[in-house]
Length: 179
Image 1 (cartoon, rainbow, N blue to C red):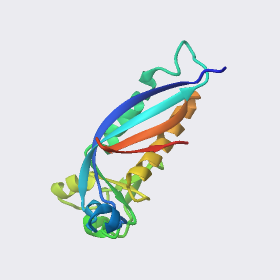
Image 2 (image 1 turned 90 degrees about the vertical axis):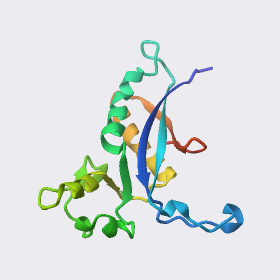
Image 3 (image 1 turned 90 degrees about the horizontal axis):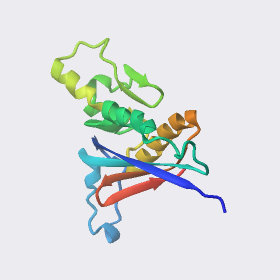
Image 4 (image 1 turned 180 degrees about the vertical axis):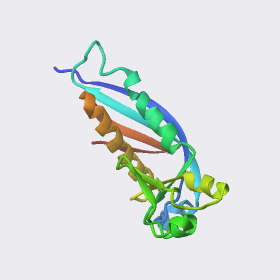
């Protein structure tokens, strides 16, 4: 019988989002208030699961091979607001970018506002720097899938399989996505 090995490492980051497409069935949610439509934040946790059918030097891979992901989260998502470019409030929240131009593509993963051609106040720049612009509604499921794609692309460079991503939006609510 062949063995299969799985390792995991968890990462925490704070983020904000808005689920503008949320609709609730009051028979199940007990009310029809869609509070996730509001701007709000979370202390998120991502658990990356890596797997292999064989070990190299006694390991699936070294846990240090995920240090890049911690840096990615810290540098790009921690204390940021993840917004869907198709959100009807996009132009209200980012009025200087309502035409969806002057956005910089970050490695094909997301976009950020480009300030180089704008004359804006420093407090406005601070606001705009906090946005991570994606092309999906930032639900737990969509964020999980997005993070899976990011981790898979990087780890495949060293022939490591991602078996799943767990994304904890809150301590009581999580999503799991598998490749």
